[in-house]
Amino acid sequence: MLLSVFAVAKETSKNPIYVIVGPTASGKSELGIELALRAGGEIINCDSVQIYKEIEIATAKISREEMRGVPHHLIDYVAPYVKYTAADWARDAGEKIWEIEARNKIPILVGGTGFYLRALREPFFESPKTDARLREKLKNIKERKGAEHLYKILERVDKASAVKLYPRDYVRTARALEVYFQTGEPISQIQPNRAAAPEFASRIKIFALNPPRDVLYERINLRAGRHFENGLVEEVKNLRATGLSDDTNALGAHGYRRVCEFLRGERTLPSAIEQSKQDVRNYAKRQMSWFRREADAVWLEGFGDAPETQKKLWKILNLE
Image (cartoon, rainbow, N blue to C red):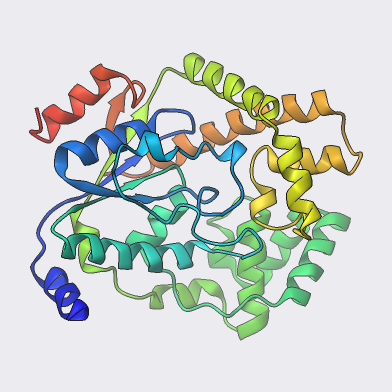
C-alpha cells in the first residue's frame, strides 16, 4: 500500500520543492522552519555535518523545541564513523522527498552543503568504489611533491578533466586519477554517462541568503567561541575515546579537526579557537561562491531569522 502511495506521488505531484541555502550562521534553519509552518512543509537536512549522530556542539543543530513541531529528516542520521557521501545523501533525500509528498506536504531542503544539492539535481555517474591503497598512495605523493605534481599526471592521462580544475585542487584531481587508474578510462569520458535527473529536479526552487559580510563574520566568531565554552573539547575527547578516528568525515568538520590537532599536541587551545573561527569564515566565503554559480537561485538580502527577510520570501511565494 505504501509503495503505491509513493508511486502516485511520483506521478502526480506538481508542487514546488523549496530549498533554503546560504553561508553558515545566516539563519537558514529559522527561515526554513517559518516557511514549513506557513506552507505545510517538512524539512530535509542539507548539511554534511548535521547528518552525523553524536557530533553536536559545533554543528549548530537546532533543538526539538526550536523545531516547533516541524518534522526534520536526515539529521542525526548516521553514526560518526560512517563515510557518508553526497551520492548517499542524494539517494536518501530523494526518498524523503517522495515520502513527504505522499503525505501531501511540501519538502523543504535546508542547509549549506552545495555539493549535496548538486548531487540531488545532477546525479553522479556510476563510479568505482574507493580503493583505500590507491588513495593512500596519491595522498603520499601530494605530501612529498605537492598537489601540482598530481595535476601534471592528470594532464597526461585526462587533459579534458585537467583543464576544468585548478592545479591545487587536490580532492578533485585525486578523484579523477583514482577513476582513471581503477577503470583505465578518463573520468571525462565516463561522466557523460550519468543517470538522468529525477522528475522533481525541475520543481526545485532555490532561495539563497546573502547577509551583510561583516555582521555574518561577527556571528561566526561568537558562535565558534561559544562552541569551545560549551564543551567542544570534551565532546571530541569522548568521541575519540570510543575509537573514532581523527581522519573520519565527522571529526574532519570545522572546529572538530582543530580540536583534534590540539589534543594531538600540534597547536595550543587559543590557536585552535582562532583557527576554527578563520576556518568557518573561509568556509562561508566558499559557500557564497558556490551558491552564486546556481543560476536559478533567488537571492534574499539579509539573515533568515530577520522578519524583513522572511517578509520578502512570503511575498515572493504569495504566503503573506
